[in-house]
Image 1 (cartoon, rainbow, N blue to C red):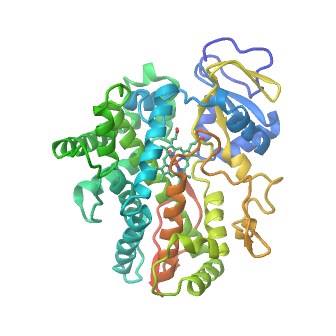
Image 2 (image 1 turned 135 degrees about the vertical axis):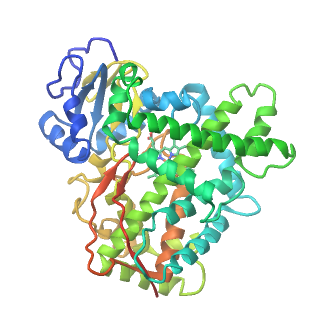
Length: 465
Ligand code: HEM
């Protein structure tokens, strides 16, 4: 926002001319602590300036709800984030706006729903993948190993089977390379060079650094998706759809489908692939870490699995309602894991008043999910890993302040799928294994902040039960 700020703009810390509050980019490794300190000083709505761009950070349940739901229509758009615009333009699902976004989102939701209800349901696909994943963990024979890539591969296979029509073997070299690229990109997005690129793109584009690696990686990932699309075009049957890409190609062939073009197909497919892999995979990695760190909680989950499902039958979604403790643990993993701490940014679509402050059109809004999920007014023990947050009289207790998928009309498009995956993968793994720290190792909850807040790489023992 290059306009002068109005008088009643939200307050914020001292900012340097031209640079703004670049001092905060330097302490990006503790975003939650930083925002908490700023909230204590400036209140629930405060502003930061990075380069020429103003950000308004919104904290606490009432105001985050107001931003995303009751005033949601005013803050529905995504801002242009230079590092993303270079790759996607404003296409696809995550970074598009207006009519184009609505149309692509509606189409994607309907198509995912159709596949969920199709001949071979999504639940069955996830169950099949659970078998592959438990087999791959069993191969480790209880020895210490880093579960990261196996989990990534399993989770990604679910989105792949819906979008590309097939899964990939865990030793498929091309696919492993693709997952590595995605992982590297997620981590690099949190690095200082990427933040500086977003603040000063016209200067940074000439400088070397990790932002250049991000662009290179995206191009390689794009090429992978383009090849898959080309193959689909070769054997497309107009009267039958095998997957998301087929459905999209059929939509492109209809008259008046002008926004349904190949560039958008590539962007939507990459969005699904990326958003559908990293998030769920990171959450499962947190889950295994919490289980190894809190063996009593792990034992209670296993006791519930044994009582409701037993040791041989595969977990199914209909078990979830009969397993309040396991459900509470998964929710607590998501709350405490807090993988998208400050949500995906929004933008004021017109001049708006929020909590008595004037927010001009174009201001970037950060609805801070951590401020809600760690709010001491909402949670009994916000900084502890305590599944009791989601239990009342032994039953599962749904909490309004639980919002890892965000809320409102632009909330996560994959929430239902992600929740199904988290339940099925988590119960399938704990049914077959007990997770433990390797001998002489103390596991901790330190994180890496990239596009997601992820556990630092760790090794763990999956001891067969
Ligand atoms: C958007 C969280 C899994 C696809 C989002 C947003 C959040 C989020 C916080 C931003 C919402 C907003 O702006 O208000 C999560 C978490 C997941 C998860 C915590 C797993 C634990 C998935 C999966 C898929 C997916 C499995 C794909 C199938 C998307 C897409 C968007 C999105 C396409 C952009 C929606 C839009 O802009 O309209 N997600 N997500 N997510 N998510 Fe997820």
